[in-house]
Length: 89
Image 1 (cartoon, rainbow, N blue to C red):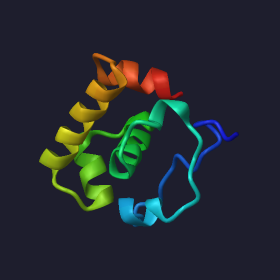
Image 2: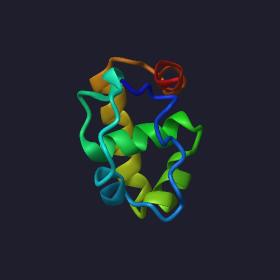
Image 3: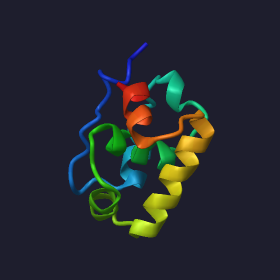
Image 4: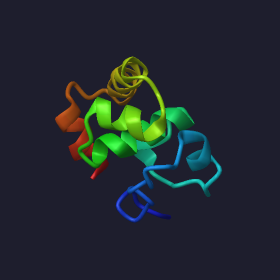
């Protein structure tokens, strides 16, 4: 089993979430309930990137990323972005 720390957490700046989805599945129990797009955003949040930086990296709007981060927090039951980072590390 591969942990989140051992996964390819640092996505290249040109890798879209669709490209990421083509990679082999990463076994991270915390991410199991998330959509593929949410998993990529969660990985970027775990790196400490802002919504604006994530949006630029993935070619999404900042609003879309903000919505996905909110959905991730709700699905994983964590109240803050900081706790999400702690959960994923």
